[in-house]
Length: 168
Image: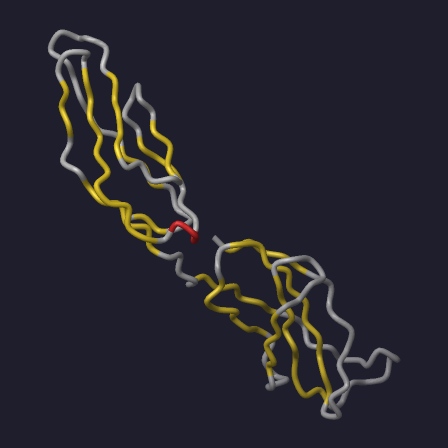
């Protein structure tokens, strides 16, 4: 079994008693994998679109006169699971944009997405005393994040400077 986005690698071992050159062949090779006829190495990185079972993969080796085969096997590609998280922290604002003291802070909006300046998701933090938050269940990739504050009237501040992080 292999998870989408992770490397799959299998290399059989074979030796000829007369040290003849061996050649490997494969039947039912998965489309996302490559195969080396000299070493027998079957490897590749399946994507989410390759999720499923690849049946009856069979690797054989020959010295030119004799053929030996491994038993046919299946390779199952399972979906990539989103289990990664990012912990954010920030300093709470103390002033309004006009320089006056901030007295009615009500919370924060965390804006994030997978492209710079294009935030496709928002999380609202309604407790103004919190200054950390964990974004959970993120798929692998790079995320761009900015935070804004809002007051009890619903007026939202400008976005903080953008930060980015990569989730494996």
